Image 1: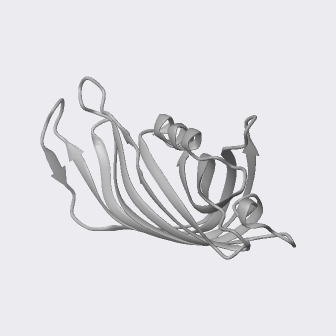
Image 2 (image 1 turned 180 degrees about the vertical axis):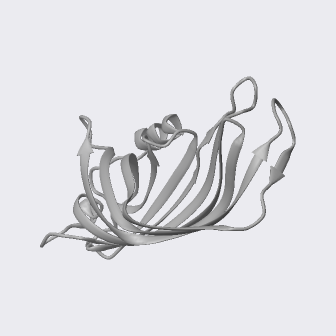
Length: 194
């Protein structure tokens, strides 16, 4: 994923170009994760992320970590006199919503469930590299997570999954997201008169 984003950066030139959208990947999340962000004017943006970190079970199939999630976020980028070439740089505050599915297992005991989340985040983004074709983005979020899940037990090595009766509800308020993302702005040549 990171290699593909760097290839986009090489193909996109920064000088005399406007940001059209950006692609990103969070380096803190193992496995597949990708996001896209669309600038709306010079101070606002809308983004969507998809993440699917998957930590494979060990040789006896007793531990696993699977998560499939989506999020959508609106951001306000601070600063006066923002130009179209730096719309996704600097400080921003965002409001996000997320949802997904998970399956966490440890020592043949696990939990499968769904979650929804909402919160506020702070992001700082800066251009890096000699030609400034890639941005590095740091994000921290606080919010609320609501989850409903079912516990299960696995009957030994490579055994069958046996669900336990009932649903477990979980509510959490606090830190919900951390990201160090590589962001590649996709730019188009600026039209005459702009």
